Length: 179
Image (cartoon, rainbow, N blue to C red; front, side, top):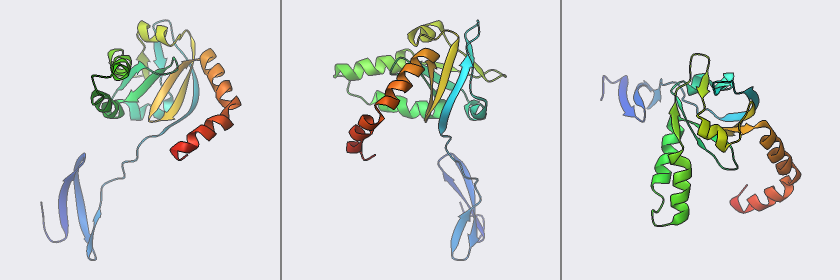
C-alpha cells in the first residue's frame, strides 16, 4: 500500500515493513532478523524436580517456548517453536506407506512436548524423556545449529571422544554431501 511518493508499506513474511525512497530505489527500515545459531557445550544439572536451566545466552531467543523430543543417538532435541514447526511439517509430508517414515514420525512427534521456560530460564523435563536419554543429574547441552541437544554427561563424553577419534573418516564420508 503506497502512502506517498517518499515511503511505502509492504507486508512480507512476518509483518509490515516501511520502505523509504532513496535515489531510484527503496530501502527498508526493518531491523535485520538474524537467525539464532546454537553453538557450544554447556554443563548443567537437573534438579530434584526435573528442571533444567537453558544456557543463559539463548534464553531470550527461547522465550516463545520450546519443543523437546526424543532425539537421535539417545539424547533429547530442543527446538525453538518456529524451527520445530518447520521440522514437523517436513515429517508430516513423509510417506505414510513406508515403515521407516512412520517409525521416525512416531519417535519425533509422539514423544514431543511443548514447554515454556520459567522466569529462571528453566524447563521441566518429563520423566519419560529423562529416562529415554538416561539423564540423571549432570548433563551437557550442546548447540547444534538450529537446535540444542541434551545429553547425559557420560554419554556425551563417550560420543564426543568417538567422533573426535574418527573425525577424518567422518569428514571423508561427508565429502559426498559437498562438505
